Image 1 (cartoon, helix red, strand yellow):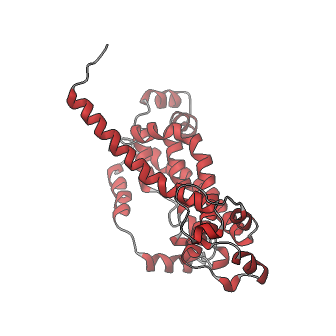
Image 2 (cartoon, one colour; image 1 turned 60 degrees about the horizontal axis):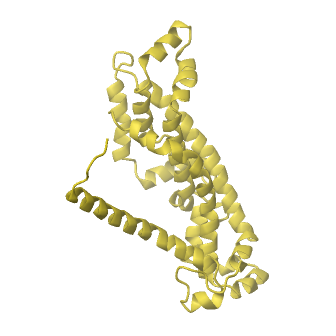
Image 3 (spheres, helix red, strand yellow; image 1 turned 90 degrees about the horizontal axis):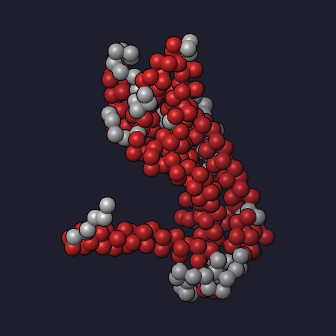
Length: 293
């Protein structure tokens, strides 16, 4: 069926197109500028000649970054954090979302439990009590200080439990008739049919752990900084005291903005590689997991 668009509709669509194009440009232009800086030589960067295209193309900043041990140590710490933290997040969210998705006649005080979790989204104990707790548990300067305080993502629980409520009750009833318990029903019925929502939760967890920097600065020593905390520290200030004479001599031939830009680009590549595999589930996971309360 052919639908004739009115003049008002065309104007509205044009307005939306312009706004979205400007928004997209506002997001992409700074990133393109950073990429250009990372591929430009020292003189061009210092002279302010680099805009949206590299000037006097060079790979020296990337060679410096890829040969620097501190960068790769921080990179490895973040990979460990993402592997442990994202796995812990997803497993705990699945285990908690399943019972909370049941009706009140199947789980007594279900609404109260949901409100208790929701309360933690609005209020928390504060920075100092959190630090004291982590210290008293002897978790300082360990990867567990980075993953355990945020192990239960309440927003992800709400997203997944709403998705679980969309699963037909007949599937669960059939599993119970065949002798399955709740544990087997969860992992063999609910999880396979909820892959879009689980992929969305996984993406949120991976990106959240990858981009986190503040907790690393609080709980970790400088030598054990995760990647984003390490990048935050060098963007603010280069610490020449920790550099060897040879490294300082190499750095003198480069511009610090080019090096910082190169490290940012290398740091964002893993997320760009993971996102396309989960993106196809992302929209449907958000939409289907947010329509009920």
